[in-house]
Length: 316
Figure: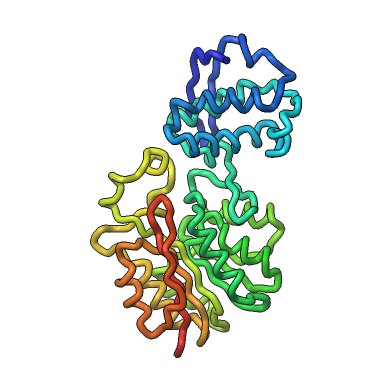
């Protein structure tokens, strides 16, 4: 095994600078080795970082695939591979030891089978949001329809929808210009045409952008974790992910849903659909905001924040 002597990470002008020194003995001297030997090495190095063995295995799989470009089949067959870039591997371990999310370390995450670029400007997409997107694309025919994603972040929701329904007119809005740059980068990488707008959804200026057409679907995964819940969060969330994309004031925890409801009244077509991811603590309060809508689905999801997905259909 490699013995890490010293490693440090600092940032200068937004760039990651790493200094890594390790003694070149054991596995890290080998250029040609079996896939399982390299995987076991990665897994062993993560033992002190991730207590949960399933999480450790998941992160090991991500790292192994990223640095070798090998798939699960290659690992199962235990093929012989050529690998020399141990400094990069130690650099990854160094950042993970500081509790940085693996998605930010590698600047990538997979959402709905699509690779997305992510960095500290955007919230890392979670499985519960994938479930919400599944509900939308599998239950509503969206070609030629207008779809609006509020608080779009990395752009994962509108990009998946546009990828599945190329003829849909898809829009994404976010107040953070840096987040929108990430979303635009992801749209270009996936060769989809989406209209992104840098706009505060609490401003009435938003109506002017859609004065000539209404939406068939409005979807949002807004901030919904209360400030007082921070004590329950892991360091990799608190220390790295953007708080303004996660947390909401304890004084008005459903403020985003109040606004989404108001926007839907003016911007959503009759029989149009609203999908929102919510904090389950405020399930009834959010439902009350859409009292003139039919609640078509009330779905519980097991996620880091125990989120719910609510689906409303506009009846009038």
